[in-house]
Image 1 (cartoon, helix red, strand yellow):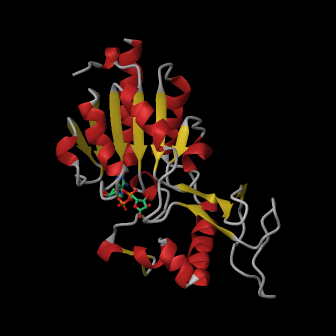
Image 2: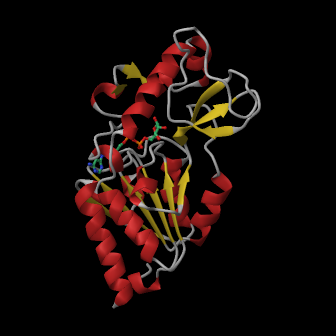
Image 3: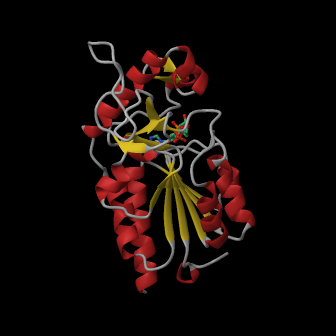
Length: 244
Ligand code: APR
């Protein structure tokens, strides 16, 4: 197993748990309900086809809510690592909030899309989007800034859809000496399988999570506790070991 000074390339996978201390709900809390909706009722293409207003309203609420939240010490610590780590580093996030970026991280890949983008299903262009996507009082949905069609949807990967930029993620996993998973339950593939892939490709594997994730057995080491404490301590350790 690689010692810290042997580590050059790091891949970090983050999930909803890293944003929990910023006040953003995780998905698999009590009873699998998410703001009183089952995930399948709002996070599938079928749900959108069946009841677009329900789905748009749900994502409008989430989009509005995240803009009032702030990065926590875990986001800040990863941004520091990103700034100071001279080797390869990729923060693959399943989160659709922008808290990694607001903390200052640059090497971030949103594999499940972003709340602050809208995707036009007519022209396929993604546009930055902060306001609502639901129809206004006159009944019209907002037009796409690129083509004018009223065919915008949240730029969020739903169940049954392909996550973004998997080629880049697997290329980074092939190079990784260390794979770290933070705040994710390990319930949703393909992200849940990254630990096995990384391990089989020779990386050391570490999880930082409130409780053991579903794939916990695949990690060389599990540290249990809140991300706001574990992540800054781990980053300090990595940067100190490099300096030693
Ligand atoms: N610090 C660290 N971990 C935490 C904290 C915290 N403060 N609070 C909660 N956790 C842990 C939980 O114990 C759980 O294991 O974070 C994990 C969150 O799990 P999920 O809610 O399942 O979130 P995530 O793994 O990101 O979900 C994956 O599911 O619905 C989809 O697309 C959605 O990206 C999402 C995907």
